[in-house]
Length: 299
Image (cartoon, rainbow, N blue to C red; front, side, top):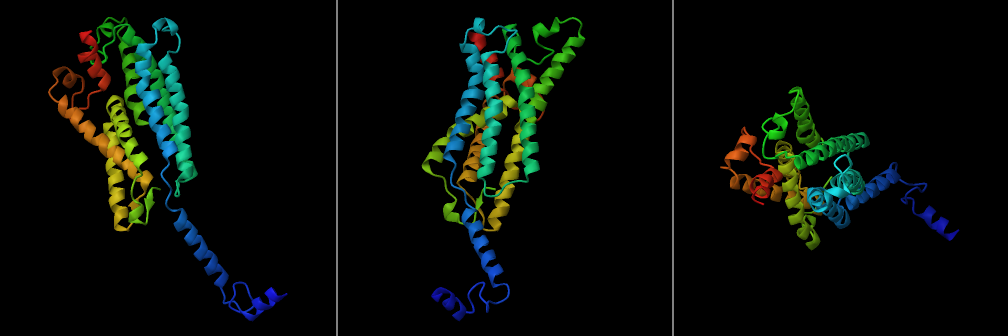
């Protein structure tokens, strides 16, 4: 009773008889704005970024290494190889981690766009799985990665010659279509920094993306994405919005990737064999083509 009387004595109280029109709405709106500001900055997702880096190195980069280590007798050429199982796990875990990362983002894309992006990634990764699986078996038959499809000795002898077109189609699906298909801002500049754990992950993350860009032959897609990110960062900076720890981690990884790709291209710039396989203005040799040309051929 006393509490009710006190509320009646203060007509300005929200919801009281003498409350100003719209006071409750303004208070609720003010509270929601404060809540949005409090939630606008996500903490650094160390667990997800660590899992991303780990599974990228083990399931993607480690996939061809595992195929070289495990005895061929354990995985006959007419059955899935150990690398295929690695690839299957990668195709399941990566979309799951992406969805978890999107769930934690304070600002998310429309759900339909998220679904389409994930479906497109899975479709491209599945195409890449088939292409890599066949390519692995061709290598055991003498296929040389540093040569084009038609220049490979085992392909030249195919009869009828129209079979070569089928292998070129497979190469297109794997190297071009498959690879191509596959809110991080804070209003406080002081929060635009990475913890020590993030700094430790930048190097292996950037090194993996270098492998992905070069081996996947997606430099055009990567450079477009990087400069789109850079333009967005500069645009948001004019609004006094800065990258949070997660956005800064990804941007730093991509910047390191660009530097590594530039050094890789400069190192192999005058290689005559790789130059012949990768003609044109965009010259980005594949690491495994370099391996079969300059490393495995010496053993």
